[in-house]
Length: 300
Image (tube, rainbow, N blue to C red):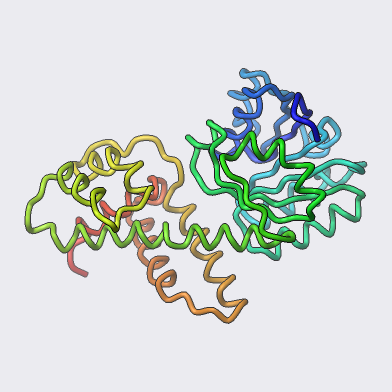
């Protein structure tokens, strides 16, 4: 696939899918979109995207189909359901599957796509809506060499770095791995803030101190102002990846670890903490709200 205008379809217009579609429009591609909740397509239509009535209609209009969906069930419905992406003639088309799921899901999907005479690469991504909009995601790629080479020009427009790890399935394994320490870190900061709460350090000073330590993550640095505002009781700001989505990813990690005979005790405990925060009304807040929950939680 040469760099230039491409007929691209984007399936799944959650926060990330919408940002990716907007990026593809901006760099000059002819973009068709579909989402189960059709209203989510309206802003993209206003930006120049065509809106398909069904996944099948989108596949017919596109040479490359990008999908980024909630879970394995949503992937199966979009690809294999009535009027799904694979319900018509897709021979010669390229699919780029970007959802965060267990490796078994893209492996099974790859077989279905190949049986229809099409090609697939997986590219789950690291990053949130801002880097997605800027084409600065971290792509974790799995697929055959020839298929990845074909997808590479488009991947490079979506990602600042797109690493190819091996066959389909390897990218999903790497995505779960890179998300794991991030999820744990949000809970760790909450516990850290809780044990020094009695000192009375003002939130902005506290965050400034933590981002100047060797334990600071890039995510903490990027959300420093947001986190300080939340600790002061202010607005959490725009949500890029909510706590309930974190719960979904944590459960996926646990299931994958169990399937491979790997114990993940930190993830088990972090999941319980995220679930408690969600039960107490934080589920729709950004994941960076987790460090604000634990200091206010009180003794249980």
